[in-house]
Length: 608
Image 1 (cartoon, rainbow, N blue to C red):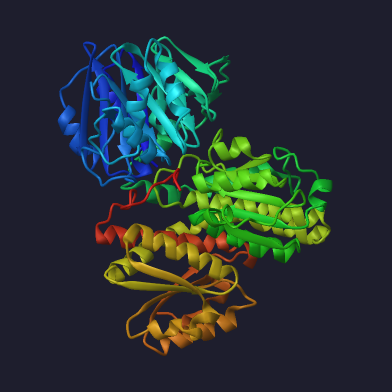
Image 2: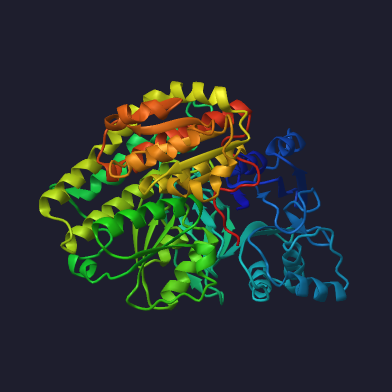
């Protein structure tokens, strides 16, 4: 969640750090700071709030041919404040660290250090680390870091600098992401690739326990017992422009509009002669035939995509599917063995709960396939196989294109599985594959209706509560549409299976209540329309999202109707979600919310 950046080279380190932190703002934060050496002396500057405040404090300062580290903090231990902001320093003030993660045994460590006369100035768990490193520091910074982390329980990504070692940054990770950027005459560290793309495309993803010593002229890597190890760099293929707004007012609307392209990028390479081809995954038809039960594990938006996956896999492949929230799965003592096929879904591939669930599943002998967006992420590396979504860099905290490409991967897997198991006839299989191939163009058509949704948002952005309803796949979609609205506009919103309204929820419907009704499933539309009539009879204002072919059936119950291009009902999830994304976006814009960086939220949730 927190953002880390570090630089060793000849440039003025301060704008490099600030620029890197700006690229990591999407991760969520409430304070920021930098530490750098200037003339061999440690300088630490921190500020509560947005980066703009820190920028004012460092404006005009110059520190060339040196090293530095920067940090954006998302508060866990201790309130947002300058004292609790990173970097943290030792009592002498010649050693500084930045940290992402949570130290679970920090209270015991703090009490031990206080008995040794060490004074703490913050409420954070991080401060124990800097004092530990100082306590063990003799002639080698990496050895002191190695000894210190051996005392820690929990997760961490660390960047460490010291006046005594003025030409190096020491970095290490455990369960929190950290990437090393390999430049020419300069090298960097960061929590995520966007922070360093301006300087290099060659990166190394640190594995758990690995320690890196970063200097201007090179990077040395060591395992957890400080044996040297070889570096195998990965070349980033993303376009740097993906980290820029390119004229859009927000990353979110830019990423919404990128969906036709990224859906095609996710789909097209996996189609061959009208069939789904998964050579990259390495799952043969024989292996697919043996799958008897599937567990899909995810959090947040990825969980909603997984719920859609459950519907379609059970419908077409006739394999029972359980969908688990990752934070619950790992603590429920799950019943699982080598016969289980597990799918973990994560945009970042660094979601702490999802990683823990993946490891729990593998420990119990299950085969794990990952659906992830970030190449080289922890989830991608630790799963038995990985299906990349190819959404490209997603900066806005509220996921849009990552969600639809996750859906596309789940649909492709579903069709491949159903056909391999003989549950789908060849002609039906090819027709469904063709139906998926048409989705990117249909999404492009829907984007042309932005003005209608913007106008409707302008008329309703003062709503205090909004309800989303649907049946079957539409209910799964309603959950994601509701989440989009609440997370960026801060409007209370809930999603309900439409048939459940009469079992209590309808008591909340009164004159003027806004209801978003999703009606894309032909076999359920008549019953869903009855549920819409139940809320209109009680004075609700209803926004209906339906396919063109059902428009005439739905128009009489809608105060506002958004008709999307006809698609196969099973694939309408990837088209019907688009109006809900756009509606949520414009509701947040009208309210003046920080659309790309909603309060209290982070893009990559790397703590429990």
